Structure formats: structure tokens, C-alpha cells
Length: 110
Length: 221
Image (tube, rainbow over all chains, first blue to last red; front, side):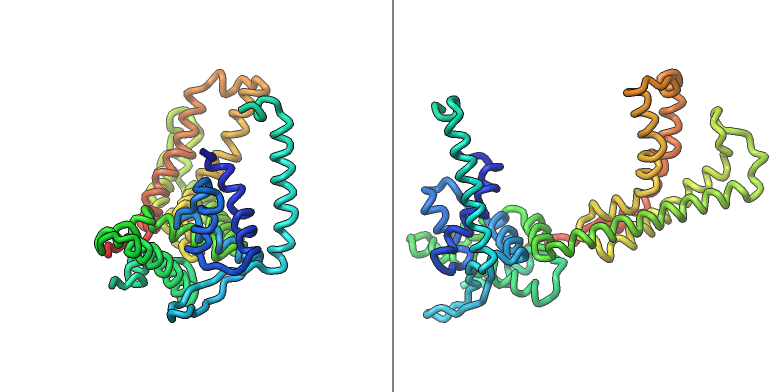
């Protein structure tokens, strides 16, 4: 089970990574992350939307209301150029962290 | 089928956002709950169970409202928080010091010192008695900009917080790290001073600030 602190740190990376594949609305985004991480990252309503709004304030993502084929309006998020730019160093940081942890014997054998 | 927007709007209560921003948030959260509901129905759950699962997505709506307000207001909220705490805080400190000074000069000098402090009793008592008004004023001014009741509380209690930080904290620091004997030799006297100049004024200010600390109550759907 992944702890809350690590989850918080990885949540933004997860959102940016998933949105890299295309725009999604909030519910779909949360479901996609949950499926792709096999349930390790699961967003509650209280965590998901404040985070999306924060990321929108930073201009990493942009939400736009769209009407689907069945006539339902939903707010879809897509990655902005600033978000794409942020994704690369974020991935690098996490990759470096995991590599560093792997180098530790105790963690490697945990 | 249930009107999810009405439900979300009622449960969220006050959001410190523009009406347009609020409508957008309500619509988006309603969409989310509706998705949960439709998925539950598609999986064969009963109407009531699907509704319950959707509603149970969120336990603390007021906390969600607070988080969303802060996230939506972004950097602006940091500036507002500074304004909502510092400006009313400095105002209440200035008025409280000026008011005490005025009371002390208003021919009360003949009164005897109280419990070995250099404090004339009557001006001090009058000052403490009038402090709730000042606490109310600080919290009232802060309410215009502060989303959180914590900011309003800090603004209302600013004078004793400043007093403690500027006068007593250095003495405690000095006693611990520089072995300054004053606090160590007279701990009761020191504690009494802290009570008179920080705790008692804080309680009086809190009394006045309390009506302005309440957040709007949640309306049950």
C-alpha cells in the first residue's frame, strides 16, 4: 500500500501523464489513473477537483466544457504547452528518486 | 432521476468564488456524481444504492468547499490572507495600545499597583472590558477577505499574539538559551504577566470575535 505523502507527490505526475494521451473529464481521469495503476492511486472527490483546479491555476492543464454525442455536457481537461513542459522534469525527478532508492540495499530488498 | 446540481449546490454551501465560478464547480461536481450513479446503475445496482454510493463519494462537503475555494483563488488567496490577517491585526494592535495609553493618562495614576506589577488596576480593567469590541472589529474587518475562520481568529487576537511574540517569547528564549535569571528567579511573576497581558486580553478579544468566526451552516439536501 502506498502512503499518503507519496501519493500526493505522484498525483500531479499521474494527471499530467494520463492527459498526455488526450483530453479527459474529471471522473474519466480518476478512473483511468486507478485502472492504469491497478488501484494503487485512487482519487477521492475531495482530492481530485482541488488538485485539478490548482493545476489549472498554474496553467499546466485547461478545462473546457464539451458536449458529448449523447448530449451530456462535461468539462474536459487537456494538457497545455506549459503542462507538457512541466511533465518532462517531473518524470526526471521521480525517476532519479526511484533510482536512488533502488541503490539503497535495504530498500531494494524490502 | 435526481437533480445532482441541486444536491451539490446545497451541500457545498458558500464557496468564496464569483457566481460564474461557483456554477461551474457545482456543474462539474454534479457531472462527477452522475457518472458514479450511472456506472452503479449499469452494474445492476438499485436506484437507491446507486444514489447512496454517489453521495458517499464525499464525506465532508465543507472541507471540499474550502479546498476548492483556495485552489480556484490560487495565488490571489495568499495575498488576500496576508491582507485579511495583517491589516486588521495591525489596526487592532494600534487601537488597543492607543486606547490603553489614553486610559492610563486619564487621571487614574493615583491607583495603587496591582499584585506588585506596575499596572494601575482601573485603566487595565477598563481596557480588558472594552477589548471584546476590538476583537469583534478585527474579526469583522478580516471577514471581508478571509475565507478561513482561522485567519479571522488570528486577526481578532492579534494584539495579545503580538504582545506574547514581542515581549514574552524573547524572555523565554533568553531563559532557556542564555540562562537569563529573570524568568527562572520569578517564574510566578512572569506567568502572571503572561496571564495579564496575553491570556486575559486574548480571552476578551475572543469573546468579541466569536460571532464573526462562524462559517455558513450546511444545508441538508
